[in-house]
Amino acid sequence: MQPFHVKLSLFTTACLMVGSMFAAPIANAAERTIAELVDAVNGTPDAASREAGKKVKLRNHTKGFCTSGYFAPNPKLHDSLNIPFFNQNPIKVTARFSLGGTNPKLSDKTPGRFMSLKIDGDKENLNFVTTNVPIFFASNLDDFFTFQTKVKQGAEGKQWLIDNKPDAKAFFNYLTQQPPSPSFANSRYFGVNSFLFTDKQNNSIAGKWIFEPVAGTAALSASELANLGDDFLKAELLQRINTQPAQWDLYIQLAEQGDEINNPTVLWPENRQRILVGKVVIDGKRDSDPQVQQCDKSIFNPLLLPKGIAASDDPILNARTAAYVESFIRRQ
Image (cartoon, rainbow, N blue to C red; front, side, top):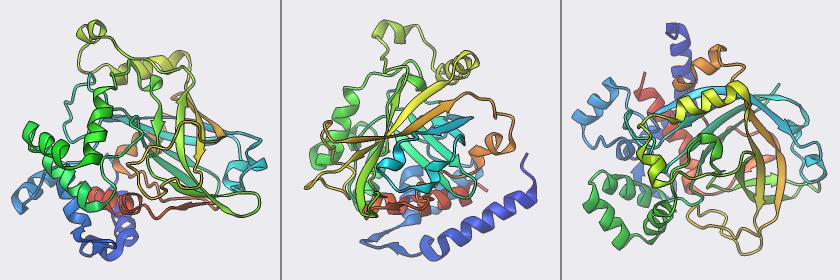
């Protein structure tokens, strides 16, 4: 149980982080407030459902668990980029693996996989929020709201999105071609939003995060799925790291002239140049640390960035922190 004074401190910090954002509309999307976006994700469109959601601490990515490891930067990274954060080694990692949605009993047989990371250095921090689907379903907050509202309506709402929202249709098409993986360790993870990275000449270059599994990707066949229960992913990963770590190589995929930087629904070509940033190693050795045990009670803030990395103008990216904090406060 988290001590009251720690909870109060977290609550106060969260409030200061967001300020008046909860009541005010986000720029470029004046028709939607952060509170409305969180309601759309949670399926709480009115006061009664919102209060009911608070009582059960409703949140996205409800089904998930925390573990730990470290990050080993590529020693040659400084030949390409000027990001002092990566000059230390190793850097401790707190990880949360999850499924999407607010259903705590969602089957692991569904294709979605998510990995969030806190990489905590000596003086700076870097957080990641990633998914195994490289494209997002909305390019702006109004379409995000519409998507989340319609999917809560079931098959009819999904069909409406397919018929009326090309970005949502592309997202669903990708999902239908994505078989479930047997392990979180066998999934690629993508940061769908772009960031700006400082190169050695102190110029800004746009790029996206990509995590490639060292163990390789794998997919479950129909017969393998039939022999599995609905809750195999957590046990599989924790058992796996008892004998050998789960590992991912982290890359930055660089944009080229003409690539859309601020639209997360656009998939850049696979042949774009990549820079190896380093390796994520999940070994569970810090799982007894309070920070790891309490990671479900915190947020993973993708805008918590070290010197040399800045946010792009992607409206989806720039709404994330305020939405995560709003959701966090509702769960207190």
